Image (cartoon, rainbow, N blue to C red; front, side, top):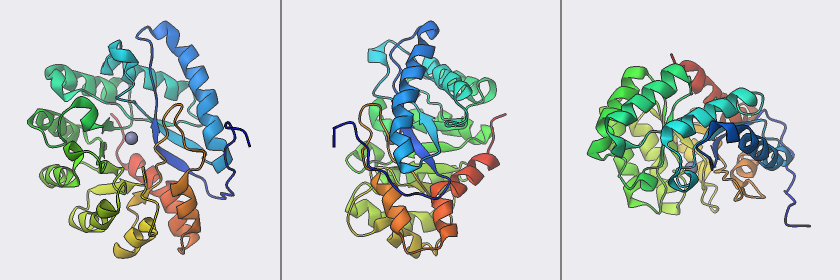
Length: 279
Ligand SMILES: [Zn+2]
């Protein structure tokens, strides 16, 4: 096997992967079609062996072109990418820098109302602020007014992204549908997720950065009575995509009905994004 080989997975389900980070090198829109073409070829090569039909494009907040591009550039790039390849990438989420003050709010309005991107995503540790930092308040308020889904990383290794911070925000903004990303990224956090799910009906959970032992996804589903709150995310990064999307295999191997699997692998996310549309 060469380093370029990906492991093939027998996956009969229509599958949507929420968690696909991208990179953007150039601030010049004239360069974007070439960037998109190259990314599309390598990205779909990581999706096809696992039978991943569609994915949601996200910014890579640590890949902002070495500081040359703005969040506004990035959102426009993602809108173009989605337009060019809607068959495989029918969704894209925008971001906004909370430290930009009023400009962040303008970027959000532009992304939702003009670009009609499908929601917002933050990786707070990349901005150097916590999930519940005061600078986020106007952004949460606007997202709630717009009726936009908000994806928030709660990666185990970052205290800026501690799950309790998201809980605090979700309690104060009950009308925002929150998509918690990387919630299962440590054994300790895996035990917290069903408790958080039961306390906050407005939080859904992806499978990004999944802790490997203990069938944590099955334990989660069992503890929430198999409610449709879990969706697939493989945490795909350009150049860093796993040759073995472990979360997908774990879902396929679960002792649950095909209906539950179909929900985790796409149905739950699709229904959620259909309910909250950009306007
Ligand atoms: Zn991520």
